[in-house]
Amino acid sequence: MELIHHYFPNLTAEQQKQFGMLQDLYTNWNEKINVISRKDIDFLYEKHVLHSLAIAKFIKFKPNTKILDIGTGGGFPAIPLAIMFPEIQMVAADSIGKKITVVENISNELGLTNITAKNIRAEQIKDTFDFVVNRAVETLTDIHKHTAKLINKSWFNDEPNGIISLKGGNLAAEINDLKHLPYNKVKVRQIPLEKYFKEPYFETKFLIYHSVQK
Image 1 (cartoon, rainbow, N blue to C red):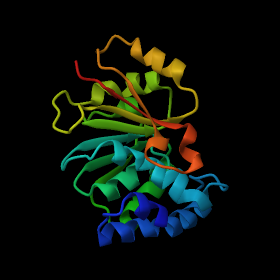
Image 2 (image 1 turned 90 degrees about the vertical axis):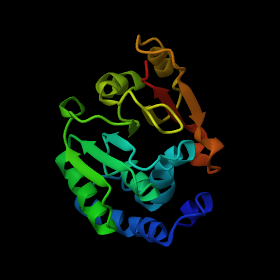
Image 3 (image 1 turned 180 degrees about the vertical axis):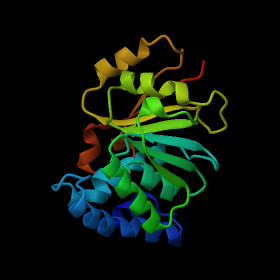
Image 4 (image 1 turned 60 degrees about the horizontal axis):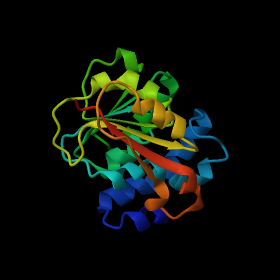
């Protein structure tokens, strides 16, 4: 929790309480339903919570922003973002029901009212959103193909509506493929997370943003 407070010193008392509850909640639920690798559970705040909050360093979502976390797994980045931005509308979607069970229960125990968990595949979603977020779910091109049609065309945040992916490793080929999709002329932005966080874990991690506006 100290790690989160270090990078986000202006949290409210309620946010501090909610972030502080995450270690015990995920440790307990992970014993019933394995949503985080056993070797990572002791590094929850660095490898999952803080990693998710890189998106909050990139953009400050305005109230009523609608966000879809596709392939949310155990609720990352959905739950940390729902805590950080209590006035957004977050949908956490995953095709695996037991993972959604974890997201629903942890959200309820945190008292989050701005997140809805759905056991659903991307192609079944009918709603529209301002942003789609994900953590290394698929290739950048596949994420675009599955979710670009779900993004609203009008926008009111400081960045145009689009897709935000958290990924690691060498992404040159994926980004090159994404740039050649015939959907827009907006340049893909790749931001190294070491720009935001100094821990060695983030040295090979990136935030990839691209707008889907025509």
